[in-house]
Length: 262
Image (cartoon, rainbow, N blue to C red; front, top):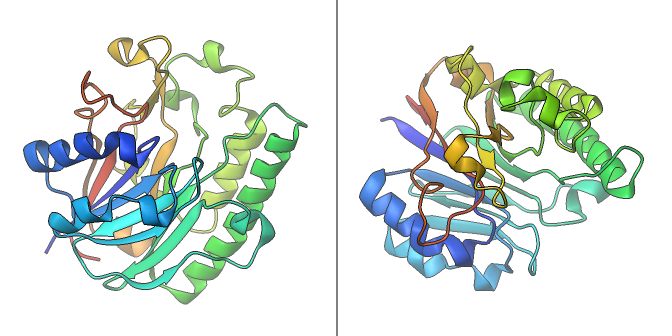
């Protein structure tokens, strides 16, 4: 049975829950929802809404900031919210669970800052720790999905205008190198694997109505080990939620991949 997996930075789950509910009921069914930037503690997460639609929920929450959650129609096992590293555990940015034979690691990478700043250095350390953790996961498990908001556009095709983003946070050469190093642990960029030459974005600036001119960045990814890439059936950015005027959308759009099985 095919299984769909979604990565979606919701920029506050409580502000977005009505929109997500409409999307799931009116637009498409999704088996596993992985949310980032939920911006609420676990007891404030709208678990009841997702349970009413048949989802099991796991949450790593934080007051007003960060936060990740996994809502799955398939049972969740071995849920993990602590990862044994100061930079990975400093904020609520990671959540791991097993579905079927697949380990899913939901990730919200720090936005960072200009080179040399404390936020920049934190982001660099976070990437280093995430790479080491992912490498261990891949040694111990054949099927691994690492997905989420990585706050980096990897290549020139992943921004609408290279000159606009030159020197900008999210497109710094050092940031892009860190993402490539993460991929080097034998993770595959599922979207680029399926669409080697297609330009698609997952984030557009609120302030400039950039969605209507498609002036965006691809900073959300579903990364997977090779056995899963071999059974990847499709992957796309679903613009339905991002193009809503009401309820107010997130500045990101969901990225949805379908695998033959997990």
